[in-house]
Image (cartoon, rainbow, N blue to C red; front, side, top):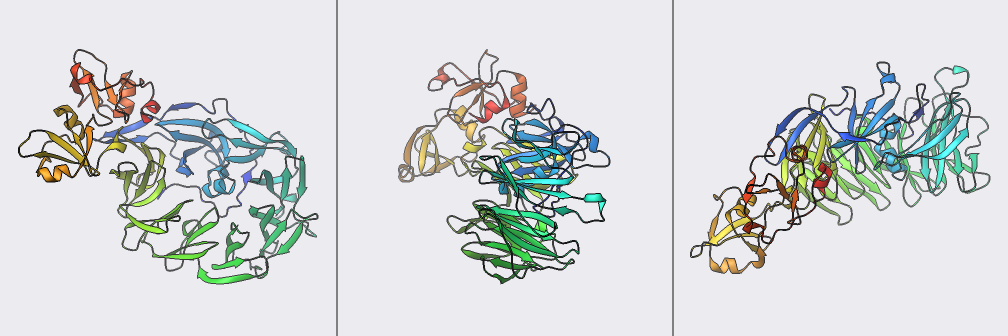
Length: 563
C-alpha cells in the first residue's frame, strides 16, 4: 500500500549523478507544509498535504520523518535522485538532490545513525566526496574530501568505528551484465586508504557489514555463484576467509548477512537460517518465508533480526538465542526497534514486546512508529491510530498505511488514495486524564475530579468544562470513598484550553505548566487549532486570573509544542 523505495539488499549503491551538484542553495530552509484539503475534529485536524504524485514516503529514519520527491531532471525516465523534506512541527525542511540509498532505515542504523552518502565532486566523475547531513539543521558536511577513484559505476559507503568503508563497482568496457566490485577502507586519522580483499582476480564484493574492523562481504562470481567472505582488516596483510558451506548457486541467494554483537554472523542461505561462530556455520533449523518478499519478511536492527517463517510465525534472534512469538495476522505487519517488537497477532490484535522487561502487552493497534512521547500505528481495518504516552489517550485519526510520528503532535501516513496525510493533535492531549472521574457528595455542592488516586477541587464551572465539557458524567459518591483519595489541591484549566479576558482581543492557550500563552497572530492560532480556532473560547475575568501566570508568547507552531 505505502509507496516505498524497495531495497533488495543492504549493500545498495549510490549511482553516479549525471545531472547537477548534490547541494542546492536553499537546502536547510524550513517552510510550512501546504494542504489541499482540511478536515477538523474536536481533538485533531487532518490535512491532505501537497507533495509530488511520485513522492516516496513518509519514511522514518529513527526519530526523523522524511518525504522524498524525484528531482525534476529525473522525470519521467528516473535516475534515483531525490529532493528530501524533513518533517517536523507542521513544517518541512528542504535538502536537495540526494541519492535514493539514504532513504533506507536499515542502512541508516548500520551507519551508526549517520545520514551519509558518497557523491562525485567533479565533472569527470573520478573524484569523490563523503557527505554527512545534520537532519536537525540540514547542514551538509564533507567528511572525506576529493578522493580519487576512476572507472566507478556505483559506490556506497559504510561508517564504522571512525573509519569509512567504500564499496565501488566497476563495469569495464560495458561487459554483459556483470560488474566487478571491491572494498576499500579509509582511516582519516592517518589519511590512509587501502583495498580490503586481495583475490587473485577481481570479482564483485558486496559489503554486508563491519564489526571491529572485520568486514563481511557477499562475493558474487561472473557465473552467478555467491559466497560469504570475512576480511579482517586488523591484520596486515588482511586475513581473508570464506565462510564454509556458503557456496550458493545462481538461482538461490544469501540474504540478511550481518554481525551480531559478539562477532558471530547470522544469515539466510537458500531460505535456511545459519549462524557462523568463526569456525563453522551451523543450520539453526528455521527458515525465512519464501512466500513474502525479503524486505517484508525480515528486519535487522543492531544485533537483532526478526523474520517471518513460511507459516508466518514471527521469530527474533540475538546472541542469547531465538524467541518465537507465534503466527502473525494476514497482513504480516511487524516492526523491530532497538527496544521493542511490535506485531499483529493471528487474531488481528496489536502486541508489544519489551526486550528489557521481556514482557508482552496488548495494544489497540500495531505500532509502526514510536517516540518517548507518543506512538502511531494501524489496525487490521486500515484505521490509523495515535496514542499519547503520558496520558494514555488514543485517537483514531484516518485510514491508510504505515503512519509515522514527526513529533509528539504530528502524524503522517499514506492514504488509500496514494496521497500523504497529516494529522495535527490538539495541544494538551498529553495531559488528558483518560481515567478521570468527576464526583461530589450528596450533602455538598463542591465538585472534585479524581484520577490516579488523587482528588482535585474544581474552583469554578469554566475549569470543569475545560476538562469534561458536560455535567452528564458527574457522580455522587460517599464521604468514605472521597476520603480514600489523596488531596491534590485546586484543579487548574486543562492544557490546550483557550481563554480570553472580557474586552481584550488577545486569546491565550493554557500550557502543561498551567501558564497562559498568548497566540500572537491569527495565523499561529490557525496552525494550532485550525479554522475553528476562535470557537469554544472561555471568557474569564480579572478575578479568575488569580493563581494563573503569563508564560511565553507563541510566535510559531513549534512554540506551542514546547509548552
